[in-house]
Image (cartoon, rainbow, N blue to C red):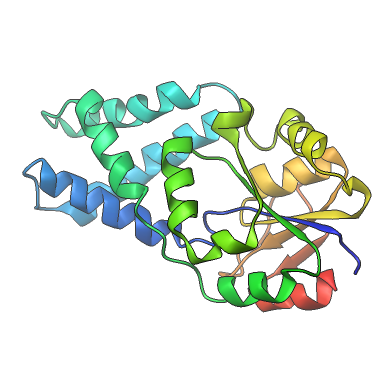
Length: 226
């Protein structure tokens, strides 16, 4: 085995977050009596949400404030008469129920299980991620789940990785796999472990963040890790 510890990002790497998020968005709006133009609203929300999560990575906003602020901004821009303090908890509850996996996720985790140690390392909200993982088919493969909100630091912060390796060993033979260049790959690079960019849409990397490996299908990990 080339790697004894494999850190997987969750959303966009193993879990189909895009589908789960869209379903939670639509369901929550319907619960508040809005069922028109949800597609257009979601596209506009995505822009705000991605920007605020980027601020989270840069430690410009806390996870506590992020929960409410993204909807406050969105409702203000769209002139929606909704209370973010009421809306956010219902949305997060709906999101926590989204356990759909990406193609190949079960196969690669099953293949690696018992051959190396597997851990999840995610930027996320604990009350969303913990229920999703507990209800997921993948839960049996992972003994360790590291969530940024519980740690107190987001990827790519070195403290996020410091926390992981205070709990686990094998830093010298560890790799992180994720779909985000700015959190997963930058974080791993900065901390001195190997990285693998999961890039299923084969986007062109125009950044200065260079992964150790790049894959477009999770099955490619078999040759990299073994």
